[in-house]
Figure (cartoon, rainbow, N blue to C red):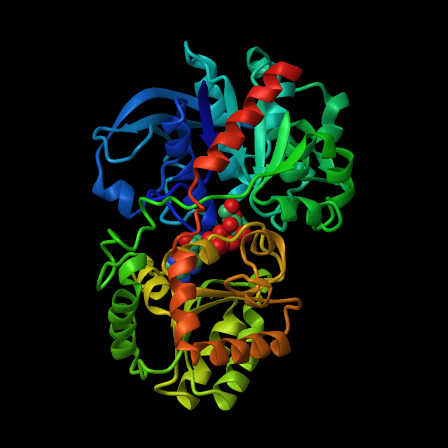
Length: 470
Ligand code: ADP
Ligand code: GLC
């Protein structure tokens, strides 16, 4: 089974969030199940591409409206990844030191056209094209409707929605850049009077998936304007829970950690990592350590943190460490809090892969009060590292975390509110004092299996079901 994933991100090449983790793991696990699964992604000017060598395996030009751009398909010269990654190198558009910016319409349209142009030339074409998020949302349409790709229109295209908040909308004045198609079908690109790549993907893809069953249910009711479309297309839509790449996220071998550990050595292992963090941030390692890692955006509920932390730090003898960046107002408020709560609270505003791993290992509790959480990987990483998650009952968090009261292993609250965050923190503080239960729970959560095996298999079944029904 030959599958190509097409994505803007893929760990460890380029990562902004969980999309990279998924695209960096799913092909590997599909290959373990006997598939020939690879990735097509943009060639960015970043640490990974500067550190490695590439060879060109294809050269051509793409036409974006009236302008031609040179492009190459590059491959790594060494076997540093567990699956093939083909890089679309368009020096004039994609080769930047960022993944996303405000010139994304041309950049990702060019990426998608170049990817399809190259696929068109392959002797052995993929049997399935698997697109991820709106940056690849026009591929289902182009593969089905653009005259130049008519020989691809029998290849099933699957779209996975990682986050329906972002849809990639753009104005009709860019329409001439989409390779020619029958204008009677322009409606397949449209949602509410503008071109909407995610909506177009939902209409044209042979199957639509999202990254947890609960998020699929939620999308039918609220999908940032696409809910009626999803309901209309529900027969081809399914939610498949993401997994954990247990080779990357393994406290026993994780080279970022201060001390490695497994479930039988969780106490000593976590304590060493906690002490490391506490000495770096001047916290008292005896107090419960709460953490947050992620994008500081409304979906993650991060705007609630300044007030919630202020109250929680006043009322409880705890430490809080935050790692993330995003909304400038929230960043500013989180910075200001540092002055008031020295030795109890700190925030690293930025992105730091190493620190994130040490936090998963060293924290006692991980906060995720998300307003929207299609899957969420952090809570699964935190389980694997023996850190108890505190989550809102939504999306993938609902599918993965059970409250301690219900014989579970986490703290689950209903609202994305300051009140609910503070109440959960208080429950966690009380739980922290019950050393026996705490110890048992840490051990137990490390053994929960969220590895990719099951979900990779579900995707394979989904692909196969398409062949049968079409
Ligand atoms: P999303 O994709 O919505 O941001 P996920 O929970 O699916 O959320 O995945 C987030 C991924 O990005 C995880 O691997 C997490 O550890 C990582 N991450 C998020 N913010 C940071 C940061 N500031 N520094 C390091 N890693 C981060
Ligand atoms: C998105 C979602 C997140 C999910 C990730 C990977 O960024 O916000 O919940 O885990 O994609 O699918």
